[in-house]
Structures are given as C-alpha cells and as structure tokens.
Length: 121
Image 1 (spheres, rainbow, N blue to C red):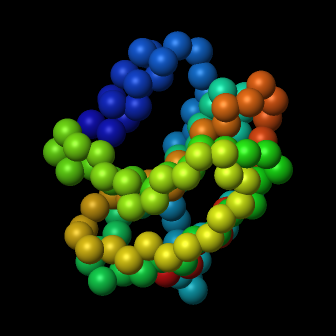
Image 2 (image 1 turned 120 degrees about the vertical axis):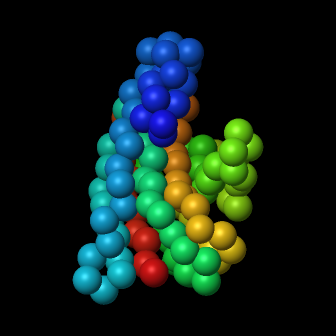
C-alpha cells in the first residue's frame, strides 16, 4: 500500500527523484546514514515505532531543505515536526501510538544536497 501511494505521488508530481529507506536499528538502538538528495528530490526514512518509544534525532545538510516527521492515520497525515528552509536540526520524538513514522527531507534547489542523519532510540 505504501509503495503504491509513493508511486502515485511521484507520477502526479512529475519528474523528481526519491529515495525511501527503511530504518534498520543497530544493536545499540541507533541508525546513522549519509544521504544525497537529488535536485527537486526527497529522501524518506521510515520505521515502525511503538508507544512509549523515544527517538532522539539530528541532521546536518550542506543546503536548506524542507523537513518533517510524519505518520498516517487513515487518509490523514499527522506532522509531529514540520520545518521549512532548514539545513540542520535536532529534537526528540515521543511516540504516543504505534505507527510507521517517517523522517522526510525535500531538496527544493537545482543542485544535489548531502546530509548526515542520526537517530537514537
């Protein structure tokens, strides 16, 4: 279902470049990745989280991005965090309900952006 929704959105949006990454926690409950976001593209990290979980997150990009953390409830999209024109940030997500949570960055520029991301449970 999620893959079908992503394909539909990409088709409607026209040419763009997307990367969907499933969060694979390491033995210490961390996840770190360096990613490249194509011009006009986006990167999305997603994973299932249970209530009572806490995730500390941070990122640092070499250019401004649009950033959000979101999850879906039926047809509604909920945004615990949503920021525009930001190249670095950090915070803590306190999970209230079991959902697939996604950290997403969009690159509005005409050149690639490189970013380092760190999540810790």
